[in-house]
Image 1 (spheres, rainbow, N blue to C red):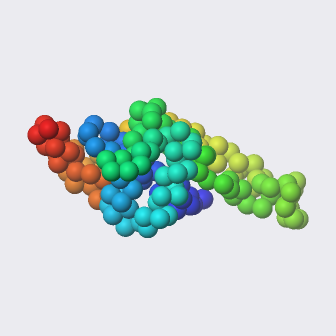
Image 2: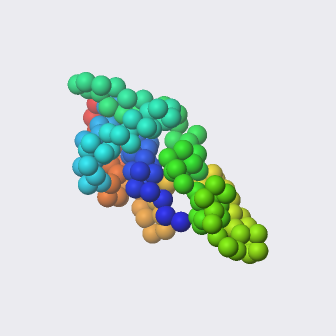
Image 3: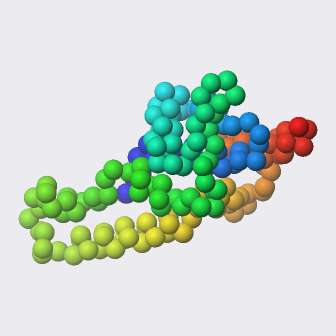
Length: 161
């Protein structure tokens, strides 16, 4: 299974906003687009979808931007993936309306993949946006992570204000 770039970008935007939640100024679409090398116009569509789902608050105009509407600890990766992905049919026989497989009803593939998908989603349901921002094995807090704001720089900005 491969997640679409739409879902990938949605998770990146939410993670970026979560990483910036303590700073006084909101995140901008241009900021996230630049950090990830993503088209600003495409990212705008993703942000609009995230706002419609109730995960982001958007403010237009000068001084505007994006903020999480819920704490990062309250948003699971599973709920984001379910809302952003449109197709969980791993093989043809998952969709009874278009299934033309001659093995349907005579093999165990559908059941096996169905159980695997259920376990995959259960694992995503156990992780929150806040969990995704924790340093991985060998990672150190405060170190630059490509695509995310530098924690030390944000801390300096907050203490200087």
